[in-house]
Length: 225
Image (tube, rainbow, N blue to C red; front, side, top):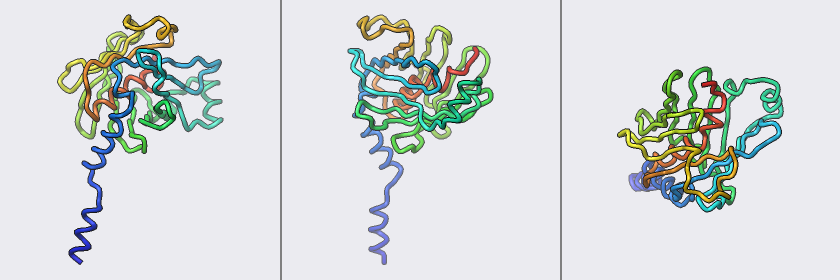
């Protein structure tokens, strides 16, 4: 009996093992291995389904961001009314092969947004939580009860956002003013650039990428600021 219990314990996975394997799998994704990400929101006649492509600095598409789980009724409601903030939005970030890398869920909100960031299986990694309503908007990057970083809107309308770690040091920036790219890569007003300054470890890396890729759909879209 004791031997059977020992074998059972040996076969049981620990949270540390799951976190280690998840971090290893994510470390191979180009999303976490490129210091420059160029995000382009694809133009639609009626924008009821959000869809983005993500490229590297050379213009190679390395990921897609797609809104999922929309019923026909929900799409119709978004066409005839302005109710986005009262609806739940679900996004999948996939790599170039179509494999899911991250999942994002923004529950219906009234004043403040929260985005739940999950791994490929939907297991929660952390949250992006709006901390204020007035002034320069700040979103905390949280894992459990810990705040491990923040995204700060320095200029909301001009798309200028600083992303900081827990020490308040800037580790990434979201901007439309980046000048280090070939013109062919940065051609439309729909594009913005995510510049990652440091080699980030998990889970901060996932929350930084998730925050940068969800600014328009999950964070900025229904803002009137």
